[in-house]
Length: 458
Length: 48
Ligand code: SF4
Ligand code: SF4
Image 1 (cartoon, rainbow over the protein chains, first blue to last red):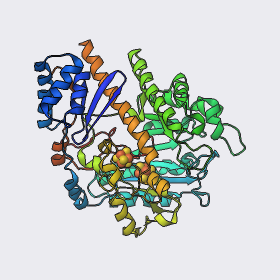
Image 2 (image 1 turned 90 degrees about the horizontal axis):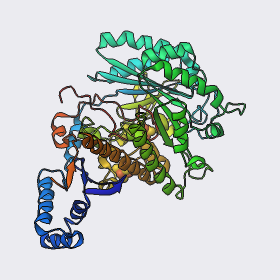
Image 3 (image 1 turned 180 degrees about the vertical axis):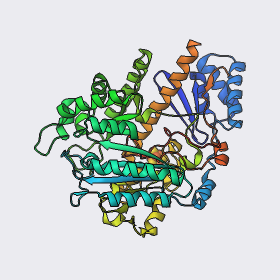
């Protein structure tokens, strides 16, 4: 399968199964798209007629296409399905935890998928003992995996900062004796960021995700305190100080866009003006009936915005003021192997979420849904039937993905989104697919542009 | 090739032979937490 598109002044052809990327001129673009549609003589004739080139030139172009086909870089077959076998047989391990240290929050954001941090349950803080047992559970369940990931999540994790600190100290103690390496992430709304947190996070956290929606009026529409006051004026100076102190360690300024700010590149612009340069902007996750839910009419606007964003990135790069956007980061040469690309997101298999009382769920988005309670950190996973269901969620488990050109960039989509949209984790959240594919087109175009503009400079 | 420039990309067929170590980051442990994407992840296989 191939996918061809024109964007940013380039003609781009992707070969799905080999994940090859070709940048081609108009003649090759037409020739590749017509290549499988008729006899060679007709192709040659059509190209010559349309472009006024001689036969030998058209022949040469077709020969190049044939060469790429035989190298497996065009029209290649997706024959990775048998590789699922290896994944089936690979010893099951858990290597990542989403640690819900606080099911409570000091903000009251209306759109919160976690229902103001409480996940439809009681307010709760995780005790050190529960957290410690969760880390032990992770070490015990991780087989011979060296890198273990723990995300301090909530609610607002800094409402339980003492426990976070003690847990990190505990993990650092254990990692030496167990031959493991912990990578920590903290996701915070910024309200409680102070010098102590900053020092700690910059020392111990591999990544910090800071929530800000962009423009003041956009941020404050949803991100308010319980008393209804917008958080922007409080958090922005804190974030600026934090990011400055962070130096070159990674962080993400993460925003959410909704039906009310489909022009989200303006929010990205605000983030840039505030001095942030590692950015992420995500579509809101909510029931379709909500007033702020994204609509079908929003889709073309969002597509345009994603293109606009890509152009902003090109421009800033050329001006020597580059920034990164999470979904546009692609590693074409050093990116994931095919196993990773076909195996799904890992929720409920190698990744689980732990609640303040130590319950286990397939991922943070399933927390609080009794149907998906897997077990707990003391007795481990009891509901193998559920984890089996998650294990089966991969790029070959959905017929929609079979014919999707983006499947090896996506690996089958988000089980939680699928569940929310269709009631089934092996469904497909089509709206999300549309956005995802658009983002991939833009991300790949940016890579092509990088290559082509550096080639020009040689 | 005159009309086609091919980007350098990882050989996925070869990665089926030496990949699958599982040391890489879990897809959702990052900035997003609301969708799945794998292509932006780094491979951490030492034996690659
Ligand atoms: S974008 Fe959608 S259809 Fe395509 S692979 Fe992902 S989940 Fe499947
Ligand atoms: S199901 Fe969705 S939200 Fe949960 S871990 Fe997977 S990609 Fe992330």
